[in-house]
Image (cartoon, rainbow over all chains, first blue to last red; front, side):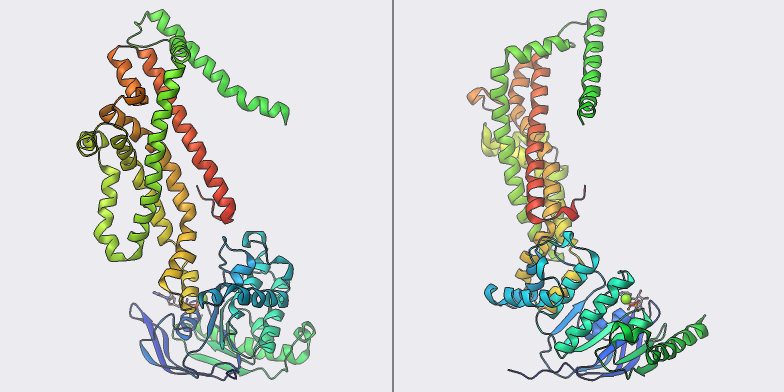
Length: 252
Length: 261
Ligand SMILES: Nc1ncnc2c1ncn2[C@@H]1O[C@H](COP(=O)(O)OP(=O)(O)O)[C@@H](O)[C@H]1O
Ligand SMILES: [Mg+2]
């Protein structure tokens, strides 16, 4: 069995343009194996484009994107849970294994175990339309993690949820990351969510995809609800927030 | 609940009594001959007297329409899957699918007689031709409107084309297919009756189209209207059957969320 600790990423001079307009502009970025990286930036600055490049759903026009392992297992979580309404919760979660050809008697127990860790052990026979938004998102998280990915990409996954549900999901994501070593790239527009979860927060500038702030959050994991109110947390949040808003102000 | 349900069927009943009464009175008052406009009471009488033949004709037409509709469902779905498989195939062959929609069935019905001979074969073919295009068009729309995020998910999982088709595109298109089937159900009856006008072999007494034709020749307009009422009834029955199938499969596929039109 391969020893896994997550994928390292190395981006050099990555450039991507649409209709002649650069969206990612010669971006350099390193992500360490096992790191939890949060990306924030004004909407339209190219965050989703960057994630699609990392997922190999899109090709860069210039530059190199090295991933530490050749046959990397990648998982993607979208803002919309995008479950298949004709599949039960358990069959939705087991889908990626099914597509890999894993037999049913192996994939179902794996999906059951994962559903229990996100607190949905009782919901496996239900169908997506019977679930709340937060529950659907937990199913979506479980589906992403069923293959034990080396790299987990999340594109504003909890943005549509209310604060309390979002905090719960943050905690689920954190404990999944702590129990299973993987690299996480997490796009969010919530500064406090970024600081709460990530080892490192980067701020992308509007129109160009330059990194205007690259900030390490030196708080130990696991972080808990109490740490959201602690003085060090608030200090880090203020620093990131000032960088983010200072930059937005120069644009305005 | 009780008084409300009483209120629900009362308005259509009252309007029915009012309208048929008005027609009856005006035909009597204007002294119109029966071959020009039959009195509603005469139509009702014809329905009653010829109930057995009319029911037999309705069954005859019903079997042809359901066979045509079934062929449309199967072939239409297969054609839609073929068209969805590649943009080039779509560009090359979709115009032929549109052809089925625009072909004037009355004009090619005589050809159907040449190809299939008089009888149910040509009638079923006419029913198929007019009912297949809504199934192709709707199923194709469904197959091409798959959630792009789910397609990305399948790509990331390195799913095969077949898996993407059978586990994502086809299940996602089922509600669209069923919408197409509902639209096609009415057309299938019309197609079968038009087919009978031209191609019925009169074997077994013939269908509704045949009954209308014979009644017209004999200037029995009361019977013509009775037969037309039976064809509406047949259309309704087939529509209900398809709607029931629709409800059932939406439930089975848990597609409540998608129930569109
Ligand atoms: N496939 C595409 N074709 C054309 N333009 C695109 C495409 N994808 C993204 N863009 C454009 O690139 C810019 C950045 O988009 P995106 O990466 O979605 O931003 P963000 O996720 O940060 O809000 C937007 O202006 C968007 O219109
Ligand atoms: Mg985005």
